[in-house]
Image 1: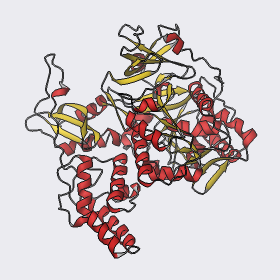
Image 2: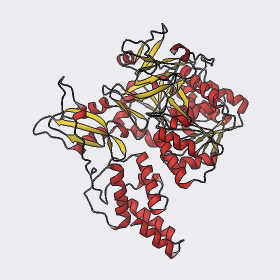
Image 3: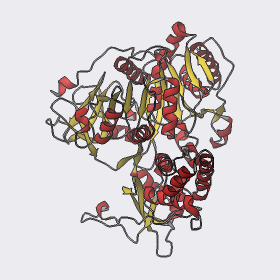
Length: 617
């Protein structure tokens, strides 16, 4: 039976470069709009010419086949141009988040041997001195570079967290990505001129699907402005305005979108046909809400890994999934992907028996750049197909009688925070670099209404006990924001089991500190008090003051979305999520809420004002 489920062979243009599929559309859809960003509209012919011009500049900077080119540009038309240009020049792109610490950027560019970076002017200072900075625009040209990448060449390098303390750069090929885009088109039948919304941050590999798939079939990419990807209302506004037919989200954001639809409704999403959930386990409750609110839209659940060209399985959800237990099924392998559920001896387990999930097929990355040991541990000889490889995902699951796969958890210390992989060992390694720390362990804990990283550290000596905020700052200087622990607990010693290993089950549940560097200042007035109360519930805190910063206390983008929704419920005013980022203290946000209330009250009757203020007290 497993052999039957893995018979997924399907023809696709394996020899071609991903950018060549976009170039094909220039010939038959040159005058059609390719990319929309705000008021800017670019046709396929214009996109191709701008990418050609930048590609020639990259070739002149020394970029050749399989060279890694870093990219540090905000979401924009220039970003799309730069992606195509890097591939046209024969290179593979390495996305850099401008919010990363400079030390992290230096680390990943060094591991990837990225000698060139396409970078916006405002971010040049983030780059190491030995990286050549190339601006994201150049005079357009109709002639394409002679250098032509094919299916076997590198297309991208995406860095994921590494258990040894060093991030791992998964190096993928054009062949795997072309297969991924070809399957997407076969499954979803996107038509020329239809619109896909690009909202995912480029450093998350799902973003590639939102960009390249529509451009390979003559469709249109509507690029969401920077920061708006955090705001469910902005996403729904964009879907309406552009009549988007396809959207992909992580389950946590999907929940926020459903909340917005329930609270406000009145949306014209008649063009929307398909929504894909990926990056995290999809809860049955979310599936049930989706099917009730959007009965004419198909919901798909995918599973895979950055190391295997984004995704490898798909399941289209139905009513039975809403009543399921555990996470919703991730389905069956799609075109040219194979999934094996194996025991410790690499034998297929029986249906219903939990085993280790492995992936095979054309999507497998070459490996991790510059790390043959990590590559050998993760990419194994395939016992079912001599000469091929298996990718050990680290996930555990089982097959159901119909062949679909159910995910049940991890077999290591890797977790996901809002869809992003975190190797706990990398956070622990960052903490151990402090001369004040003897040992450290990091776990995922439920605090308030969300999962948080919690770190436990022991002092290097009796007179060298570190302050928790000091250790948080140390990690923040070295790792991305989503990898910084919300809480650090300093212990005299870590609890050990009889084998001498850390007993994570016996680590104490932390009492959430107030956090942040601000001196505690009591709240004044109903708006400040209400906002502080919302933060206490969301963040699991005992006390919040007027000068406290939402993000210093452990808040993040999705939690900011929940907070914005609660403000709307409580005060009946719209507080955009981006306002939480620009004015993140209780006092600043209370002032903004009061301003919105004054504007609202001007248009209300006396009785309505009394009712509003009574509900806000």
